[in-house]
Length: 200
Image (cartoon, rainbow, N blue to C red):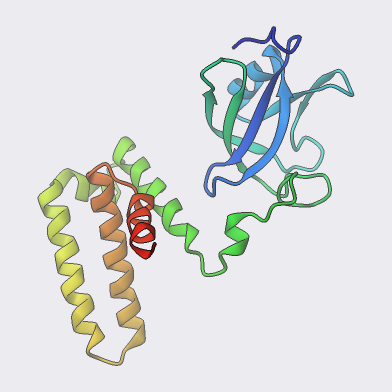
């Protein structure tokens, strides 16, 4: 990283890893960046205190690092993190007073994106005791077959009046669709983009 452009500091944009909401902007020197990488919690350089400070060290609202990205000029960072609580000292979820996408999503639709992230993690780590792992081990044809089976079961339940069974079959279909998308290297956001384009 090029710390010389701003006299030893670089701006670090903090983004919610799950919702993509921009949470705050801070500055880091090389020591702050090293500590962030080592401890997995976002640490800044305070220009007012002239010292390092870990976000949340007083409030407990740490920013747990998921990914650190460098821009093309090596003078700005984008840090994706999971916030442990409100980010701003005012109690707001972001320092820009922007509503977190999750808070605008009372039905939990954003959970679908989080679920696919978990499915992708299963694909990478392949834990032995995971049903998702067994699907990936079975291969793309088996996963596609499961999507078909769940779709048929949903159709069957749609003809009855048992809401609980119907919703459970819908959840099974959606889950297996997410597994299939992940196996194909696709994201649910790409499907949403197609729907948005059709809507236009």
